[in-house]
Amino acid sequence: MRALRPVLAMLGLRRAVLARAVALGSLTLAASVALSGTAAWLIVRAAQMPPVMYLNVAAVGVRTFGILRGVSRYLERLATHDAALAGVAELRTQLYERLSAGRTEELARLRRGDLLARTGADVDDVGDVVIRALVPAGVSVVVGLGSVVLIACFSVPSALVLLACLAVTAVVVPALAGRADSRAETVRVASRAEVATATEALVSRAAELAVGGGRPDALAALEAAHTQARDGERLAARPLAWSAATAVLAVGASVLGALLVAVPAVGSGALTATELAVVVLVPLAAFEATAPLPAAAAQLRRSAQAARRISALLAATDSAARPGVVRDSVAPDGVAPDAAPEALDPLATTLQPPGLHARGLVCGWPGGEACTAPLDLDLTGGSLAVVGPSGTGKTTLLLTLAGMLAPVGGAVRVDGVDPHGMRGPERAAHVALTAEDAHVFGTSVLENIRVARGDVAREEALELLDAVGLRAWVEALPDGLDTVVGPETISGGERRRLLVARALASPAPLLLLDEPAEHLPDDVAQALVRDLLALGRHERSVVVVTHHVAAVEAADAVVTLGHAVPAGAAATGAAPGAASAAPAPAASEA
Image 1 (cartoon, one colour):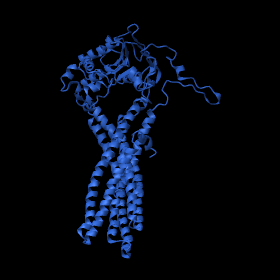
Image 2 (cartoon, rainbow, N blue to C red; image 1 turned 120 degrees about the vertical axis):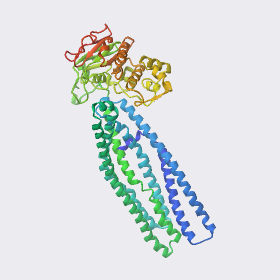
Image 3 (cartoon, rainbow, N blue to C red; image 1 turned 60 degrees about the horizontal axis):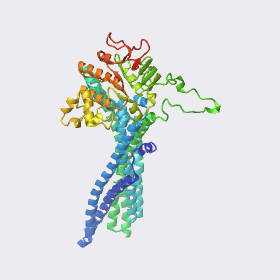
Image 4 (tube, rainbow, N blue to C red; image 1 turned 180 degrees about the vertical axis):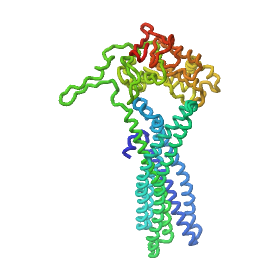
């Protein structure tokens, strides 16, 4: 519970909701206990052949408790699932919000499959603790103690036997099951991440694997991950099976103990025959309350493990201080603090106009080596094309300019602010990034565009789609802008152009586009790249990463990473006052 408590707070569960779920669950099992007791009394009393009217109340009670059990079970399921699903939605929303406002370079260290597992299956596991652990535990306490009190009304020794057996099934058996299950949980969590990683690779790289012949190896990796996952589930199932067997033995011991204690009481006249039936048969229903507890203990450990992984993710990405912001401090013993990082910042003492500016900028992934030589960039209301072979750091440069990665060296400013220090809405107000693998959501075309700006009107959306050559395509769809699309329902070229339309909808003055014309015919791609570079003349700064070097003459400046651009393909120099690029020799040229 110590590991779960911080994440459970993010579920937004109210005590009243949990109390209602426990009350309805307790009512369900209480009806079951009452049904068993009433039926036992009715059977024994009927065997004594009294007048029928003596049995009417018990017969009505049997019907009442039977109906009540079904109705309250349905209401309890509604209450618990409503609470759990609402909590999962709230947790996932808060998780996304905190990740979007956190340190993105820490997210970059994670494999995509691992990140999907933490924001997907781990969140579901935390939500499952409500249905499968917290509510069953509360119900078992209420119904177990109530059953003991009921039996004590007839026979205190029998009640003590029931209490002891309930304690075994409610405390000892779940503890053993949880401890044994914890050994399997590590394997299960690791295998789940491997399954997610292998699945994501198969889905996102399907075409590449098919062309390159790598699909059999990818399928083999997925099968191996599934095998590991199955082994983990089997390992977890064994202790649960043993705990279930122990619970059954405890039920039998309770019935046998009740007989050993109550039969002599009947002989001495302390109990009647009908009361003996109640004392012996009621525990059979009472143990329904403790039957889910071994699985609840396993779920509690599983949810705690998921909560630790979520907490570790949040701790890594949350930033107490914004990068690039220096606070006054005094070192101990009167020693002056070290020089502020800004003192070494080549842009710290320079007053930059609005736009993109970089000095000695070196890019690289966290924990890796630098993949670009130092770059000097100045872009104010102009366009910059970044070209070069694959693997030379074009996307890494774009992510660094967007603030998604911290510079390995040098400094970069967007509108006078370090982009790596921007978070959430502040970043969106300055920079719009369309990555090569940006996501098309499973919703309407209009809502996919509104991801960039929520107030995009329908006519404006059509104009944006017209700008990227998609208006005729959208108008031909069954529901036009309201047609639901997704990654699997549109082609690669349509996906690219829809993402570009989304980028154009952004109000940010700096647009960063990674391979916007990929998967398009060459003539269409070159025309689109030229049109995007021309946006730099209309109150925006545009940086386009592209392989279509024939179209970069429309740019105000060109940065070439790695090999040189073929003669005549690169625009050299810059429009006066619009854009310039002056990277280090041998790394790139402008």
